[in-house]
Length: 240
Image (tube, rainbow, N blue to C red; front, side, top):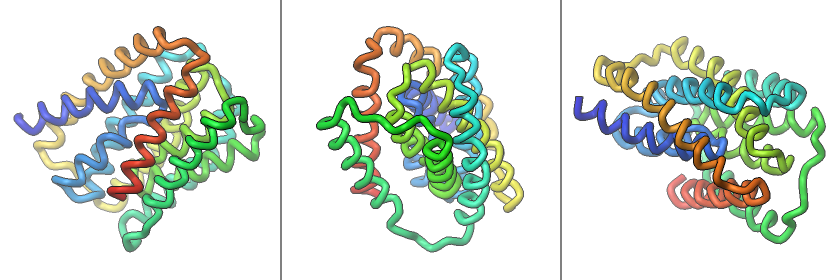
């Protein structure tokens, strides 16, 4: 029960930050959980919590639906998420996390000097974002930061950004969780108990994030997300 309560607190913090930034809970939870359990187990546990978080984003920010953008990300994201999950069982350690961390930091620096810059909101751009975020979500459990980088480049309103992020992640999470289970990964009794606590707690975190975003002016939202992109990039670069 002690472990379950600690994971519940971790979920509350990760859900609030993950919802507000659109990165999801994985970016915070996976690096902590791999210190105590094998990576596939951590990815399965966090993947299920993340899936619940996707549903909360969709429900709380449902006015921000942009289905063309969602489908552009989702189709390639599903395939890439399955591939990344399959590779997580057998691939040797690669420096991809540090490369991603360096990219995110350089991207934030670029945004700081080019605040009006944005990507064309095309199907090709969305498909590229879905491919990369799905691959990193399945392999490392940190695809939200990549997805956030692409969605931030579209300079979307907060509600569109969060809803789109949640719906895209829902497609990817269902795919990768299925692949983890297919590969034989299971949760022990203690982690199942923790899961029963963490899922409803993630709703509280998402609600707190919504209250926070209601207080952030839309003109400052991109800067808010960029700050967290830089923090994630620094973590990946130093501890990747």
